[in-house]
Amino acid sequence: MDDVLEELFAVIEARKETLPEGSYTASLFTHEKGENAVLEKLGEETTELVLAAKDDDREEIAHEGADIVYHLLVLLAMKDMELSDLEAELEARR
Ligand SMILES: N=c1c2ncn([C@@H]3O[C@H](COP(=O)(O)OP(=O)(O)OP(=O)(O)O)[C@@H](O)[C@H]3O)c2ncn1[C@@H]1O[C@H](COP(=O)(O)O)[C@@H](O)[C@H]1O
Image: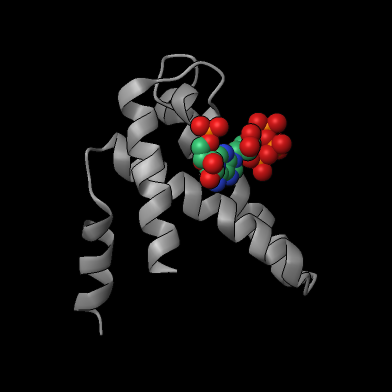
């Protein structure tokens, strides 16, 4: 899990840096979409996750959960934060 998150975060940071054409991730870092689009997605996906949980739909829970994690990592990159900021917070709670 750690590796997947680290790799995904590295890809997101690279998209932020190079803004390649045709990349959804890159579009989130431009005026085309921006922070509001990320926050909107997080809101929508959280509602979808709640509905999936109510339906006991495990496949959908995993799908929506992954969408949320991805957009959360985009938000961290947008705020010039690191994955370690999230990890430090989780570690501190153990
Ligand atoms: N993990 C993701 C990921 N999760 C979700 N999404 C995109 O997030 C968008 C919104 O997800 P939704 O589930 O709401 O999908 P939807 O309802 O079809 O979306 P809309 O039509 O409303 O945009 C979709 O366009 C998805 O493609 C992602 N896009 C990219 N990644 C990762 O980012 C990497 C870089 O991808 P690029 O964005 O192509 O650079 C990829 O290799 C993946 O690892």
